[in-house]
Length: 472
Ligand SMILES: *Cc1c(COP(=O)(O)O)cnc(C)c1O
Image (cartoon, rainbow, N blue to C red; front, side, top):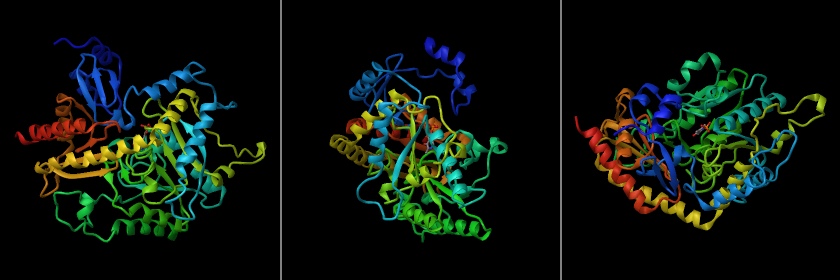
């Protein structure tokens, strides 16, 4: 078959993110043209299920009538105006809506901050960048640290801008740029399946449920803070993805980890930055934010991917009045937060976000999320029969499957084998689209995905793993 003309144009002119373009140029890329609910169609009319919500952004499905209408209504008024010097209705209303959503009336442990102010930017990286800059300045201005340093988790990924990369710890992505970065410290993440402290043998179940340990990973966090203190210094903030460390390989945290770690950080007078770019807004949580599953409220809450329901690039960093107040002063004191982007508080993005949050709060959506989480859990069970399935871990509406050479030994495939990539290619052939993280297959469909569709996803995944990894 001749290459589709749009595929040709793409290959001629574009450079794709996180992509070895030599491989890209050899194949024929799928050109996605249309979407509806959990389904996508390519330019040749073939139908797919969007099993990773278009790189973890889409919450309620594609082409959603309420989101479409919200954007069209705003579009008839104005698409974008500057947030430098001007206010805008949609952005202001969204601020109110986010602050309400982020401060539930119950369920949080006492003595934690109230999130009161919203700073907008464009994507997850910039939401994190804003939090880092605010925390840095806050630590200096309040005399908590003269040269503030950050602590984050091993394997962490918080985005691709230089600050966010500095806080990341994935050598494959970050090493090349080490000369451009500022120093941050890392501490072990609670990766139960591959934890050196977990004495349990591999079993056919989520490693968190069978783990045999004494939460040594939490002791490591305490030790890190103590070591910093011994050197007469302190961290400005600790940066975590609550509940589920996504880009690190969908590392789901055991219950109680975040609550304990947040307690340690607070005990040392260190602020918390929660990167809920992926987990938040109902995705990897039973609440609206994964922090709240553990009763934790951070000092900075970073939101992006699902904020607009997956329609437009928009991000928000929420923080407390205490942080906000540290930037108040006479003009000539220059305490202003000198940071911002041209599209800050975009009206179309704000309108989409407002509509998406309204949907999220509807009873019907809560029911859909619960059903989806249950269906994912039930259908994933069929994978345990495959010897290459090492771990299956789930948080809310996100499920991950870690592929290994043999489940009895947990021996990983080398990355060069591209086990994850090949399994996902097999999935695409079967009408299911997702992207792996190394050897981890991510299943994260929109909330509207039906039981029949979930069945189809896991049948395809089962067959693709079997075909790809069982044939020598
Ligand atoms: C995707 C992601 C980011 C970066 O967001 P972009 O919108 O790609 O800049 C940061 N943190 C987490 C946890 C993410 O999943």
